[in-house]
Image (cartoon, rainbow, N blue to C red; front, top):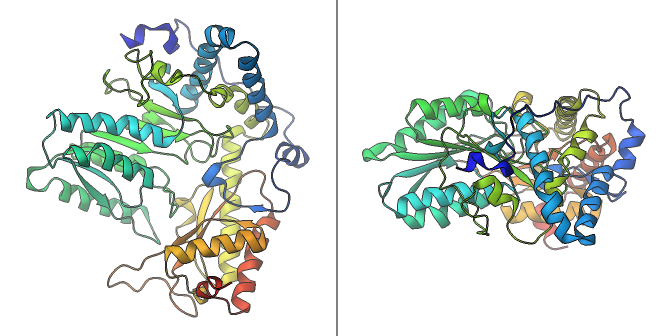
Length: 451
């Protein structure tokens, strides 16, 4: 039995309490020092894509890397498993899981999706599920998740139902209504929805989803399993897996929780998880339970999984700890979003309460952003000419809907701005002024292609 294996981290006593938050809080000067390795001239307002790692955590990572390089055998036999278990215990407490063996550390949310979806795919291939039974997901799910469904589910005979996420969105009610419609579609003609994949925070466009309510609806509608893709969650919103109530929940630790890339946790509810859940990379640990399989997938750098204690020390230097950081980032990203929208005469893509540490801000219609190609070109232009790094989203108008307007036309493009502790007002002013300069100069996305 996998729960009996001591490498899962089970013990007869409770894990130690979280370290106390420091009484001497980190200063702005300390923060600048921690992130002094960032490019000094770039307005880096895209923490959501790759995250950020402070210098003190990078030092801890280097310590682990040197341990391995000095004496690999001693590291493997004496340090690696205990170090990963210590990290898993911290995550267990942070997310309010019942057991440490419900927590596995994997490379990223994409790996976690493969773990869950290959299991669903096997059930189709082995005839446990009927052909054309379905998987439900949001239409704006991360592209790698869509590809995993294609690789594991549809090729084995399953079908897919996509829930249309309204955007710009005005309330949670709009999302709940779309989910219910899609469930009805998925259950038509006698089909069964075998798995629902729900984002906690969508990537592009970025919106905080009412995940607890959506999971509750899925349960009430008889959907067998629910997988929450929360790649952006831990460190930007409260994560309580028991409150959420899903079977599987994944979140990257390198996006908003300050780990170096790349590492994520995958929570699997013990009461609904069977032993046929496996890491896609098969090692000699196959069959010993997912946490142990994930802790050894062959010789590689495991340091990102080992620095979680150092990350906890870092976040507890802030007033309020991780909760204080989350509030600070949310308040600031909303403030900066409103400043940009006011300057550009546009709108926010969602109410402030439906954002975390990222928010969508409409771009002036005079930029004439009419395609994904335009969005990529404008993003590159901002990077190369203004030293501003920010993702850009092309909003495709729905048939029969006019969309949101500014004074000159329909808004078809949005920037996704992030706020992390290292960001300053000047970062957002740099973006504001760059867009205003382009508009004042009469530049459109079409013109940028000719430059």
